[in-house]
Length: 472
View (cartoon, rainbow, N blue to C red):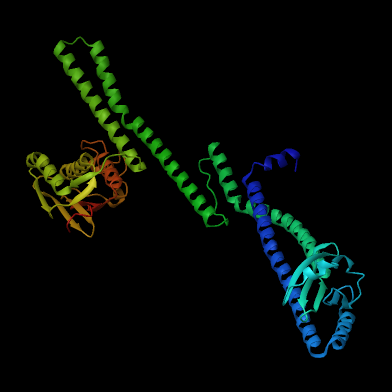
């Protein structure tokens, strides 16, 4: 790895995570060791104090029961067992004279003299002090106690071995911590890189997509639930973007294909107006035709944009309380003259108020498109019926006609933009009505289905979620 690569690693998340791993490990280890060391040291010193108290109680009992001789024998035995460099005893009389004393060579620095000896002992009982010895601050513990009314004793036990053990423990722990820090840093770096491998894969995929590979996807990775969810979300986002791009391409193709004829007709009309010698009335009629063609083009363009926005989930409109029963009644009243002209009976069955959350204009347009479609393909003397029902949190609106029906091969395509069945190509229309109706229904959280039998008619059923307050 080059020096520049090493320097660049400082700015990576893996490097920072590794530092955090190492830092928290060191802090945790130091705190743990400090607690352990304090507890060990306190326990070691408590053992020494307990040993001093036991020795004092034993010696005091011997002196009280048998005098100086049994005490002297006990002290000799103790020095022989423990060693003169670890155990020291001194018995002091009323004037500070030494009645009994062990070897002083190792303890000379601990012995107060004169009045200090008298002041060191308590009036009764005993006291224990830690003192510096053997190069350690708490190298020995000294007990000053009373053996009788005018007799005092001094018992010293060395803690040099214990302090050496604690020193060794500190040094060993320092080496262990150093090795552990190196291992934890290496482990942390490995874990961080492993954990971030999925992020790196997603980054590479994003770079390839930015370079034009729009079909690139992130494979399933074993980096944990979070990375898997990120990869799934990333792929879902790419699928959505691909769908939007595909929709835009289809819309562009449709515009180029279906708007070509109206534009051509307008151009022909304009050329005729320039070339032909016509009076003002003819020119005015020609201008009216051009305006009509322009209106049709604008309506088609606006409809296609609305469909694209609704299918892409990008439609933004305010949702209000809309009573679908009222919308159906208004639509039937609007189309009643058309039905009468075609000698079609228009019937409706409404199950009371069915309130939904939606945009009134869009829902009116959806109902109008489906009703107009039913009337358009129904022959004279037939019945077109609308049925509105509410239940289980949803409303269902059915459009039933007795028209030519839809072939099974066409049912899967009738909601596509500009798709027209073979038997309907000679009828007026742009092929956008059903596409717009479906887009409006989907944008309101609903669904639309069709059932049809050729020669017998079709049933279009729209379902929408009801408002919570709507009675069922």
